[in-house]
Length: 315
Image 1 (tube, one colour):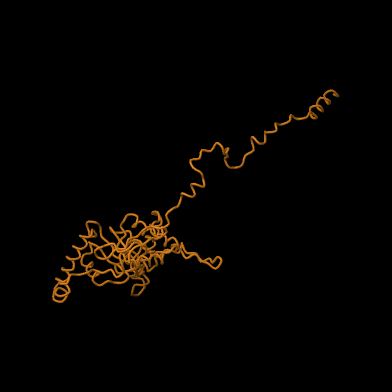
Image 2 (cartoon, one colour):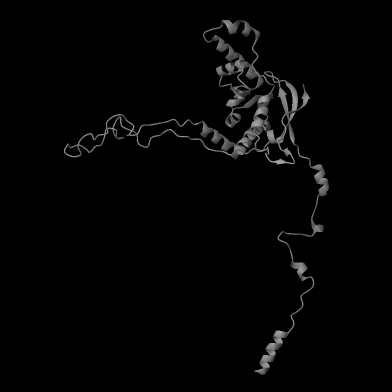
């Protein structure tokens, strides 16, 4: 017994083998995967890359005259305004939001309690040989009420303001990137020939004046590549331009004209091209850049978003 106890005591008191000095350095590592710096393959120096990488912050916009679309000036606009990447999810949310809020929801039906007449029982429950019946306002009777019918309601939904504003600029950017956004000078209106002012506008009656306008505007749009063969064109102006609006009302299949207050995201996505005044574009951007504007004041300065419409060339 004493021998066995001495043996166990010796085993317990025997010193452990000393670990190698470099064992902790070999196996110790952080949570991230690391590699020796000398083994990393680098194609260029970091400082050189930072100096050579200068992303574009503006895009050029040509301003044209109307209706002949001759270039008159060149401007630069922020990429946050006219060069956003395509976000179909944002556009879908905006179109659904606008559609829901334009639904009237005025459909209404009368229930059995709204139909005119007495609500007494038509005939006794028993003894007549006929099926039991309630009042004449019952939904199963002719002239009775409607069960589970529609009633006035609000179909409107909600959408975050910043999401909606970014969808506006995404729609404009989509048109710009495809070359389908034409910016014209303010005061965009249709120039009519001199003979129309002297003769047709005063003396043509019984639809001949409207036919003259339809034929003329069809020829103008066809020569500019803005007519039906190239897709219907949307003209957006600051307010109603009498000649332009009246002429396009005669040929709705060629294009349409809207003022700023009547345009929404869906209108910008429909048709072949969008032609708008410079002032309209600037007003759209200023109205829909809440996600770029900060209300937090730091050191007496608040970020008001990128500046729009810096003129480079032209009058």
